[in-house]
Image 1: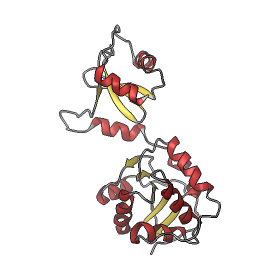
Image 2: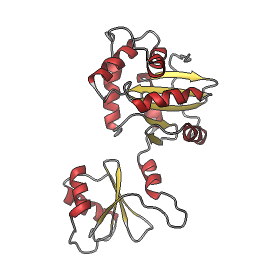
Image 3: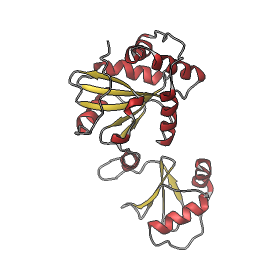
Image 4: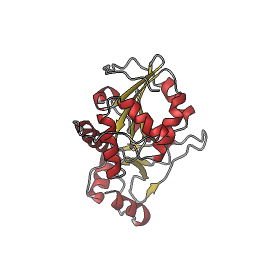
Length: 247
């Protein structure tokens, strides 16, 4: 679907009469794409409609005479409207996350809670792990999402089967110490995490989620993570699991 949409962005001009509202635009764009569009919303800019599909935003006029790709910037505030909308549209219900599938670490009072999806062979994840050592008063849930290689899957299994999962994770990600063992325990959690990540349209690691449901794709700067943690503090119900404080 995405390839079809990109080709439309580059080349196709539609010949339609004016369409009345979001519903009509949605039906027309879905007919052209041959697939489902998540949402269509009228913007306050130049009469454009926002089209959200496959985790991306495109824009079109009411006639579908053109489709535009790229960021929409508010000319007065210089605010990236597209980025803000993607953050809202890609938000999740944090309370529904199966935290029992994740590795839990608590630092300080643990009041600030967030989640990461990471691949053990992801270089950005390793850099993020080192930076997050400077975070205090947090509870971090790490979902093992081996999507880069077969070796990623093997390392994830070994880490999950370790007696101290948090230590095995940090030993590898921070110190480069290969996890021991053969990964022979029940590693259903790893398989379920990969399926969960696909359902949540996570296409790269690391991906971070906060208790207000918002996500950050990629290795965000520590200052941005601190800001999001402070903004998203809520009394969300978190089911406690065995606590491990990292070294």
